[in-house]
Amino acid sequence: MTHSDILIIGGGIAGMSAAFFLAKAGKSVTVLEREDQPGYHSTGRSAALYSETYGPKIIRKMSTASRDFFITPPDGFTDHPILTPRGIIMTAAPGEEAKLDEILTEGRANGANFVSLTPAELKEIIPVINTDLIASAAHETDAMDIDVHALHWGFIRQFKSLGGTLITKADVCAISKTDGTWQVTLGNGQTHSGDIIVNAAGAWVDDIATKAGVKPLGITPKRRTAVMVDLPSDVNAHGWPLVASLDESLYFKEDAGRLLVSPADTTPTEPHDVQPEELDIAITIDRLMTATSIEVRRPGESWAGLRSFFADGDPVSAFDPADGSFYWLAGQGGYGIQTAPAMGEYAASLICGGGIPVHMEKLGITEDALSATRPSLVTGK
Ligand SMILES: Cc1cc2nc3c(=O)[nH]c(=O)nc-3n(C[C@H](O)[C@H](O)[C@H](O)COP(=O)(O)OP(=O)(O)OC[C@H]3O[C@@H](n4cnc5c(N)ncnc54)[C@H](O)[C@@H]3O)c2cc1C
Image 1 (spheres, rainbow, N blue to C red):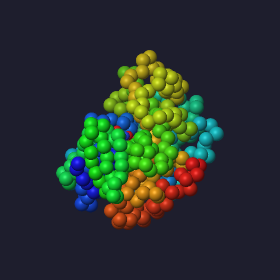
Image 2 (tube, protein in one colour):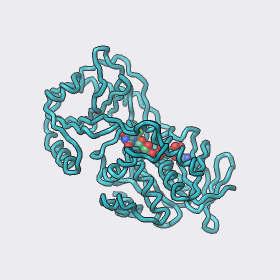
Image 3 (cartoon, rainbow, N blue to C red):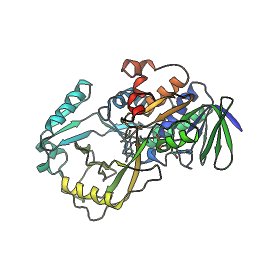
Image 4 (tube, rainbow, N blue to C red):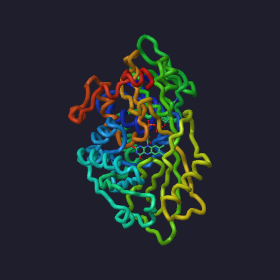
């Protein structure tokens, strides 16, 4: 049996970002990942977007807290920029103008660059858009694309160079605790021990908690579908911002000369290797054809991924209230990539007893906001 200070279960972006910061702090760390590719689940299926105005308050703060890392990662992390310009245009249907104004006001107050667009101005940027259905729009020019692979593998490479161990095909099947030390047994019979477990198993965090004899916090994985669509030869989408409807029923984004389209579905499901449903693909295409003049004869490849949420939609990054050696790093929803640097640094700092990193404290990030004992989790509301 090998022993580490910390065993991390899950080698997605959450597990690997925490692993990097923990190894940097001098801890011996082993990451156990069930798949042979650590990005196989949610991390490898995202829309790869960074926006400091997207998501609940604590997510927006964690995204802002991640910006410096994205722009100036550690030496040797990656050989090209992690963020590249994209922009987001939010479209409001008649009746939604006030809601859009609210977002604009809040975004601007937080320093985001927002430009209001009339339907005619929107059509100049996205010529295929059907403006009959749009009352107004807002362009957040600072939103970026994230190179998810570069980010994830940057964490993995640096973690390994700091002496960390990542074991793939390591399916955690049983977890026990003897004399204050965790023992984890894999499907192949191997065992690993550690002083602290970090539960970064994405959609499976409640399953891991149950195995460890810790009370589950009630995660709900929600399916989201993405479909690739070919563009007509006379449409050049290069440089288009991502376009999202304010009612969260559709978004599309140019991807290597094609469109990545999602109906922004949020269907609750069980944790599993989720696949797209025929009906969701049909809904995606129908909504795209209603929102634009694009004719889709045959959809391209499609996939689905899980976005996992706690009851109040906020993540948890905290020790379990009943077991101070079991750390939850979970519930990142649809924002786990854009918050990964700050979430990883925060978790490592708390685990090492360092409290909240100063730059996060300055942004108003509190332990209460990320705790496992906040009332909404305890009461399930
Ligand atoms: C369609 C879609 C679009 C998205 N768009 C964005 C976006 O634009 N921006 C953004 O920031 N986020 C986005 N997200 C969300 C983001 O992808 C997730 O928040 C993030 O990937 C979660 O990372 P994770 O490491 O927690 O989960 P995962 O990547 O799922 O990693 C968890 C890992 O735990 C492992 N595991 C589970 N059980 C065990 C076990 N028993 N033993 C060993 N290992 C185990 C799994 O194999 C898995 O690899 C999107 C998600 C989807 C689905």
